[in-house]
Image (cartoon, rainbow, N blue to C red):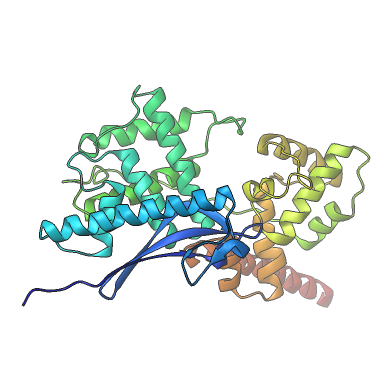
Length: 361
């Protein structure tokens, strides 16, 4: 008996990713009991969305334009479904999604793979992790353009030499928001993310062999520096007559108590947060450290470390909650901060024991 598939398309919004009252729109593909979601790269104010009909509500030109765009996507997905049925291929939500992204073509490219990963994995990755993949995507594009003088490269062309050349490019490249080239661990993070995307291509059988087979990432163990409660209070209670230092102090303290990264702070409303480069921020923070008598390399990212340890974990916030607030996709990343707290407690207890012993003498 011929198998009959149940097929459905529904547009939905993700309410847990609302920003400024707007939520991202996704299309949900259902075949039999299996589902997958795809971002349509559009956002809408929740008041303008009809959940029941899965479409925008209203009659203004922008709403009509959006609904027309959604119908075009519905038509494309339906056509892909019909193509699979006609050609007697396996019909699954992922197969339809692959056709939608054009990954069923014979010659797949690196930029196509990255775009596919960053779009299709949007459902599974936290925003903090996803934005790091977007940064790696940017550097891959720069490498292709500046060093290979190409817009893209076929996956079949990737080899060990490509990885080594990309790594060298990252080490020598001078980003606009950095005074110095990337550190070793930052380079390795980009290489690691590229490797994960290549592994996806291998698992999907878009590549015959993994060019990373002979490559080994070498991370340098770095102690994460944090501010103690006393050091944080020093900065918090310090009054600066210089306006730029007082402004940067406010941003830094805000991040210490919220855990927001530089990129997230700059995305807040322009009325409250004028744009200032990360380079300038860190330069001013070094002045603040000197004026407060703090002998640490004060950077804006150190604020996140301070939030995770001095503010959150030390005060009993569960590590799972801290992980969620920091946007970590892997709890092991957050556990690094827990080890910092444990080490600090150990040091404090050791100092207490020395003090008690000295009083007995």
